[in-house]
Structures are given as structure tokens and as C-alpha cells.
Image 1 (cartoon, rainbow, N blue to C red):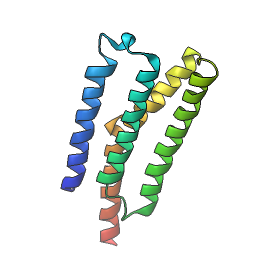
Image 2 (cartoon, rainbow, N blue to C red):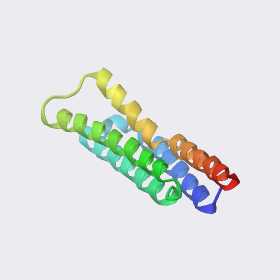
Image 3 (cartoon, helix red, strand yellow):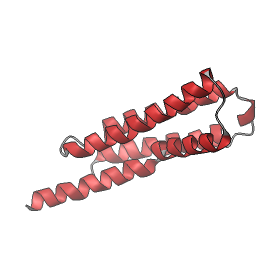
Image 4 (spheres, rainbow, N blue to C red):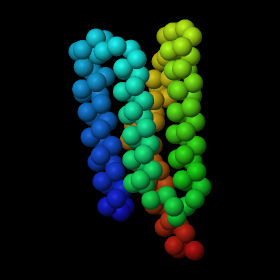
Length: 130
């Protein structure tokens, strides 16, 4: 794996750890206003998307770059749509908020970044062998 991939993974790991230690697992989590918590989660989501976009070298396999964009942009759209409804119209029920939290978790966790990197590596190796 290229050095660029490992730098991105390290940055994502540190961001993800700091996010959980200082924000999600913080004893003062409930004292933070709900809208501020939403903004922090959304900014983390955008940051992870941009890091993956910059650090993953997906240009060589174009459809993987498309998948990265589709997965993140559709997740961001879903979360933003429900978040706007939550802010403007009416607070969402707990079960929908749990689903949105899980979507956010999937998008910010380093798991997607690692799987895209590994898939990219193995596809490039197969392409070189042909």
C-alpha cells in the first residue's frame, strides 16, 4: 500500500478516536446543545469524506471513485434531509435517529476507507498481471 494510504488511515484513526473520546463518550455530551452536536457530527462526516477523497488514490480505477462518491454523498443527503426535518418541522422519533446514527457511524469509521484501499490494491494487482 502506498504511503499516502497509510497517512490517510492514520489521520482517520486519530480523528475517529478523538471524536469518540472527546465527544461521543464525553460525560458532558448531553450538556452540548442538540444542534451543536448535529453540526459537530456533520463536520466530522464531511472531513472524513474529504480525507478519503484526497488520500485514496482511486483515479486509476474510476468506478471505485464513483462508489466512494455515491456512498458518501447519498449518506450525507439522507442524514441532511432528516436533519433538516428534525430542525425545522418536528424532532424525529428515536428509532429513526438510531438509524441515522448508524449511517453516520458507517461513513466516518475507517472501515470503509480500509476496504476501499484493499479492494483498490487487489484490483490493481490483477490489472497488472493481465
